[in-house]
Image (cartoon, rainbow, N blue to C red; front, side, top):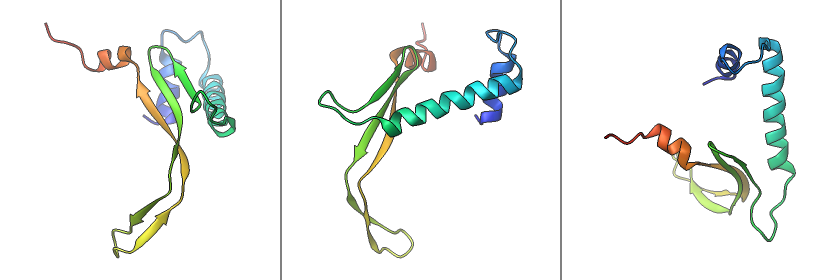
Amino acid sequence: MTKTELIDKITKSPLNTGMTKKQVSVVVDALFEELGNFFIKTKATKKGDPKLTYPGFGTFKKKKRNAKKGRNPQNKEVINIPAHYTVTFTPSSILKGKMNPRKK
């Protein structure tokens, strides 16, 4: 789904309180800006890596990947991949249940 498709779906949703496409676009932009800032600015603590949980949907978690060796598939040359951060997503059991309904 693209950003435009998401905005269209929210605008046409019965949960929409009369917001225009422009207003929905501003809200979607603000939401993703805040999510990005959260993961950029937060640091790991003794309790673990920073995470953002949305009940019924899932958990996004900032994770550090260690440096490693890789291989360029075109010329088979060994390359060094530096340590970096990424974001992982774990779906909630509710979302998993909706995606994989049990047959009776």
